[in-house]
Amino acid sequence: MKKILLYSDSPGFGGHEIMSVRMANALAKANEIHFVFHHKMIAQGLDTGVRQIRIPMQTKIGPLACLRNLNIPDVIRLRRMIRGIGPDMSIILQPAIDFCLRGAVASRSLGIKTVSYIPRYSSVAKQDVFMGAAIEWLFGLYARLFHAFITIGLAQQRNINELVRGAV
Image (tube, rainbow, N blue to C red; front, side):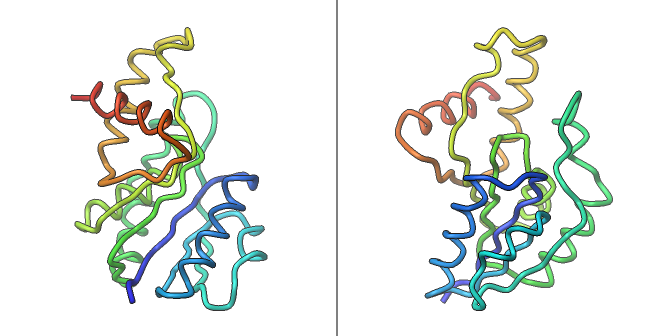
C-alpha cells in the first residue's frame, strides 16, 4: 500500500475536479490517500476512505498569475504539511500548467515523486498571446517540476513533451 497525496488549490469546480475526485476514490481502494484541496465541493464527492485536508489558499487568476501563484509563505506551510503526511508520491491536479504550483514546489522540494494530472496543454506561444514566448518558457520551467504527467491522450503528451524541451 502506498501513501499518495493529491493536491488541488484550484478556485473552480468542474470536470477536472470531478475526475480528480473519482481518481482519489479509485486509488483509495488499495492505497492511503490524503486529498489536500481548496474548493469545498471536492469534499462532497470523496469516499470515507480518503483523508481530507481543506486549505484556504487557492490559485490566483489574472495578470501575472503565473508568478503570483508561487507565494513563498504558502509553499513553506504546505511543505510542513506534506512532510508531516510523508507521502510516497504527490499527484498535483492541474487544470492548467500554471495552477497548483505551490503544491508542486513544496512536494518536489521535499524529494517526493511529483506527478501532474493535467488533461490538456496547448502552446501559449502559438496563440498570439502578448509575450507568449516568454510565458511559454516560464510554463516550461514549471513543467520541469514534475517527474511524470498523467494526461488524456498521445497528442497532449506530445504537447507537454514539447513544452518541457522548450525550457531547456
